[in-house]
Structure formats: C-alpha cells, structure tokens
Picture 1 (cartoon, helix red, strand yellow):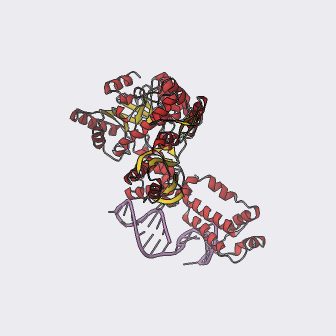
Picture 2 (cartoon, helix red, strand yellow):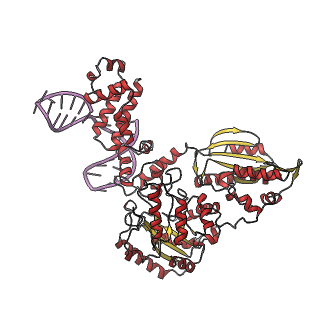
Picture 3 (spheres, helix red, strand yellow):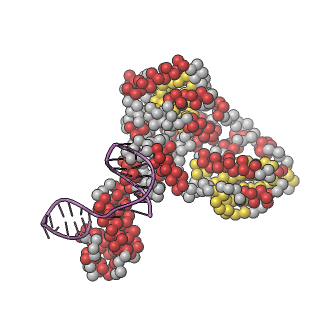
Length: 570
DNA sequence: GCCGTTTTCGGCCCGACTGTTTTCAGTCG
C-alpha cells in the first residue's frame, strides 16, 4: 500500500471525526499523523514490518495498531465503520465555501440535512438563518456555493435552464439575424429535469448567427461548431445547442427537436404506415414535400389533432389525437385562487399582509395561508397561541379587503401514525388543512402508505401535500404506493396537491393522468415561502399540463363558493 | 488520539477574517 493511500485515509478519519463532533484534538491527532507519514523518509511498509512505526513521533499505541492493520490487510475496520455512520453528503458539503465540519454538524443535527440538495432547499425555505452561528449572509453564501458546485452535474432543474434559455433566445433574436426562434427540446415539453437547452432558429445568414451564438457573453466553452448545429457550455454549466434550418423547414424541425424521442419514433411509424417519410426537414410522400406552415398542420396531415408539446411523451397522446380527444389543457390564467402559502409566522420570508397584497396584485380572488403546524419545529411550526393570533390578523384583513378572501389554513404535519398535528377543537376551525409528510421518511412502503391513507381518512384533511416527498436532484421520494394513495383520495373525495415549487413538482406528472382518469381533483399550489414564490404556480401548471389536466380537474380554478362547497362535503 | 510529565491527566498552532453576537465561534490558509 502506498503512502498516499494511507495519508488519505488518515485525513478522512480526521474529517469524519470532526463531522461527528468528536474531540477536536483526536481529529487533529489523525491529521498530524497523516502529515508525519507524508514527510516520512522511510517506506511505511518497512516500518510496519520491522515494528518501528510506534517510534515515530505522533504515532502512539492506537494509531500504530490501526496503521498495522491497514497496511497488512489493506483495510481498516475502524474507518469503514466510521464512514457508515456519516452520510456521504456531509463530506460533499465541505466543498461548499464557508462550510466546515462544525456548521455541517449543526445542519445535520438541527435540520436533519444529509445531502447538498436538501441543503439548497433549506436555504430556499429560509431555514438556516435562525440556526446558532448562522445568519442571512451565511445562508446566502452557502446557497451561492451550491449553485457553483451544481454547474458540474449535467442535470438541471427546469426553472434554472428555462431562465437561461429565455435570456439566450432574447439575445439571438436581438442579433436581428433570426427569422424565427424557439426554445425546443425537453424545456418546451416542460420536463421537470433537463440536461440541456435546445434552441431552434431560422435565418438567412446561419453562419453569422452561429458565430454570434458562440460569442454570446454567457458562453464558457464552445463544444462543437458547424453550419446547422453549434453546442456550447454556458457559464451556468448548462449546455446549449443551437440548430439553424431553412425557414420553410421550421415547423418540421420544431416538431423533431421538441421530441420526445419516443413520441417522434411513434409519429414516424404512423407516417410510414401512411406511406409518408417524416424527418426534421419535412414530410415527404414519394420524395415530394407535403407543405406545412405550422406544427398543427403536420399533425393534421397525419390525421391527428394538434398535440401540445407537454403531452409528447408517447404516453397515449397519438391515440388520443387520432380520436380527437386531446384535452384543453389548463392554463395559468384559469387559476382564481392560491393555496399553500407560508408567512413569517413560520418559515416564510414575507409577512402575511405582504403575501396577501402580492396575491391581490396577481389577481387572485382567494388565498389560503397555510403555515407549518406545531410539530414542524425545524420550520417554526405554529403553537395554538400563535394560530389564534394569526386568525385574528386574518379576520382583520378580511374586513379590510373586498377583492380577496383570506382562508385560515394550515400545512399540518402527518404524524407517525397518520394523525394530524392539532386537537379536533383546533382542526375544525380551519378553512383548509393540507396534510404533508415532513419527517420520518424511512418507513417501509406499507407503513408509509398506511400513514398517508390514515391522513386522507381524517375528515379535516382537504388536500394531500407533496405526496411523494421528492426533492428534485436532491432526494428521492420516500417509499410509498402512490396508486393506493390515489385510490384512497378518490374514495374519500380528497384533493391531491401539485406542489409547484420548482424543487419539488410533486405529484410527479407520470401519476397525474392515472388520478385524473379516476376522477380525483387536484390543487396547484405554490408552497410559497416568499412573495416571489407565489409565481411558482406557473411551474405547477406545466406539470399539470404534462398530466393531461384541464381547468375542471383543478379546484383552484373554481370560484371560492364552489371550492368551499367541495371542502364542506369531505 | 498523542505526549510528557511536578508520572496517568491536562493540554494540544495560530492569525486574519467573516459574520455573528454583544465578546466570540467557525473557517481558511
């Protein structure tokens, strides 16, 4: 075993001990030993063989024993045990500037954070500021550090890539060289996670356009550059492709580069059956172009009604289009009210009145304030006294405004046995209870499913919040039988949330259509922790559309009276 | 965990800097 491996292992042990909060001097002893061995003149294997390691200053009885084990067997049980006891994500966090073992330990112990993704989400939810030794600036610095690290992972949250794509599109259009320019690919399909940005443009001067694309100020690297396709890496770490085609080819190319691959394959298959060849340059019957000036025409030529990009996943959309049964998908303007809003009463960044004011500005007719419940100590959950205070404030505000109604709500933790977080006396006074899992993620699938179904059975539960608990690119869903939960929601007439936080987008759209077909209703909720967060509903709309939802499937497209009626019938 | 003893327990490198905190803890080099 070479010296470097030994040194690395000793340093790692030091680190792990610090993360565990062991005696710092014990950790230092390992660092010291690592440095001692690093500068050792003699071969360490020889020292072990001749039992002279113990004579080296800094190596005592315990280290001598461990190093002997390591060098003779190639393994060190102590180190392996230690590694098992510390989540690997904590070690990764050391890469974040400003974070050392002590702060990481605090994050782990106080907030239960085990991965960088969870940490990022905790920053977004403003959870770090109240921890001992943390504050506004620390939280900001950590968040920025995470953004830097994330650049190199190759997968990106929809909203981050989308924002980049919009800027890029504006830049390209600003060159004056594009005739048409669109964001295509998985972004256009509103996938929750994307791996790159695809932009399609038409131009009379493609070469110049490619040059200007490659010299866009946000470009860090040019990966490939040609006449029809150029690939770059942006400063944000996201890859972007620009494809340029002739203007008459645009509709075909837009369809082709929007995908998905599976949808395209099925479409080509269908075309072939009709004796038509289909590719990014056109539809051809016996090599003669079938002229189409829009995507809609392409579908029509194949005897299909228009399929919105969000549905192009080859999950039944072609068959539905053939029957003329593509639904009129929900749009953001359909929303009349907003549920699931946090305020400074718990872990929100803005006050109750600020949230209400912003909701009014956005044109909503009702808003449900749903701070965390008392067991959510990590998020400043509300004890009964605080609830009473909040209700007083809500009543005052309701007197003041005649254009918006504020509902008294709560995002109640679902406790271990599936019960809600307050006594019946309190529960019955809420207008809206959203029941969500926030703790004890590690249960068996059967236990977790039963827990959530118990919450569904509770007559005060109206909406089931972020059903799978996933944090995109950060934390997988807990084990749960989503289909069983959906069936229970149907049976008890409960609403399922589409959590629109761009970090969650939960319920996953792949389940939504199943629930819709059963007749389950949804609510698109921003889970807003700031006034800006209210606008996250747009991401929920994208996911709802991917799940084939129409306005009538989503209760917050209804007038308040209708919503309250649904609630009262549960 | 190591070392060195006034020999078995108490001390172990530190200064700049930042951001908390209200006199200091944690990070970085």
